[in-house]
Length: 226
Image (cartoon, rainbow, N blue to C red; front, side, top):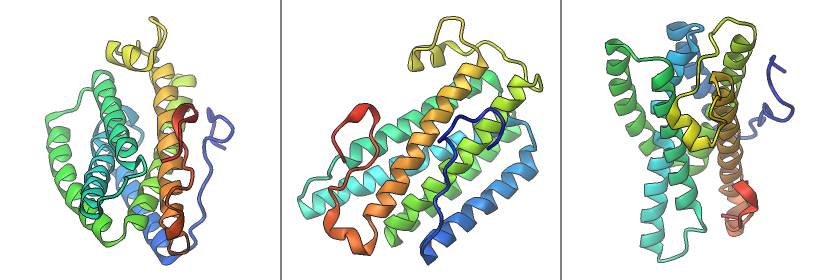
């Protein structure tokens, strides 16, 4: 386990089907480009990637909403969970903007990346919602790994442990004197939760389990299953 990680934060879902392997391959490709472009500039990496990470929940939530309307049936709590995920990822972005100010080029990169990724994920979800959720699960696995590396860098002095932004302190109810380290830990815990939820949704959507759509998926605070 990478330095700075907590037990249970980095489980990996072994791909079982072609769609799983495709999703994992796409995520590894994205990881390659992120590493090549940002290297170890984790603050700037977070700003760009969190902009993209906020897309899947909104897209999936809207498509689940339309599906529930068409079929005139319950959404099983999926819509709220997915929209909450998108909102949570947006708060990650709003927090890290205060830590690493994006350059004009990075703002342009955000615009381009978001436009491409939105349309890609929209089409992927229409073709295979299961593969789309598996893709997000693997994407969140990489997010947990990246934030673990970022945390290790703060702990060894590579990155300054600056004060956490006020917006982060309010959102996660951190201590008034909380610093970057506490922010990273809170964000990493969110990403681990999103990872578990999306892998669980992909499992529920497996062909052999279509009749079990009310199966339990990870929820915060012991809520009822989606």
